[in-house]
Image (tube, rainbow, N blue to C red; front, side, top):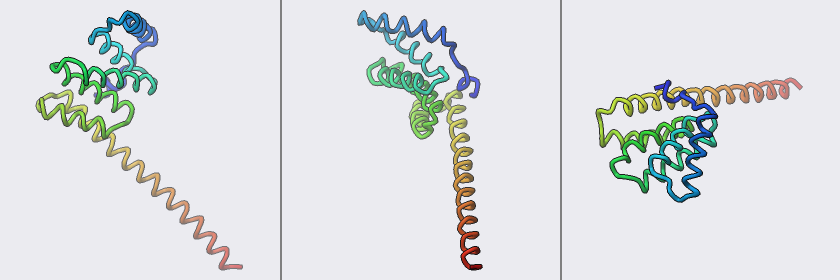
Length: 150
C-alpha cells in the first residue's frame, strides 16, 4: 500500500495533464476521463494543496459522474484523504466501498494501512501530551519546592 501512497508524479507530467485539463475546460469539453486523469495526477503530487484540488475534482466526479464509476472514485478519494491525513474521511469512504465490494483487496489493504496509521499517530499524540504534562508537572514541582525553601 505504501508504494501507492508514496508514488509521486513528476512536475512535468503534472503540467502536461494540467494543460490538457485547462484547455478542455476553456472549450467546455472536459470529459470524465480527462477530469479523473488530472485529479489522479494531483493526488499523486507531493504538495497538499494539489492533493486537495484533486480531491475536489474527484468529489465532483463522484457526485455527477457515472454511477458505475462511483466505486472507483471512492477508492481514489480514500487515497487522497489518506495522503492528507484525513483518516476518518478515508475510513468512511473505505467502509462504504467495502460494503459494496467486501472482497476488494486493495480497499482492505488501504483500510488496514489507515487504521494502523491512526493507531500509531494516536499513540504518538498521547506520548507527546503525556511528555508535555510531565514537563509541566516537573516545572510546577520545582517551583513549589523553591517556594517552600524560601
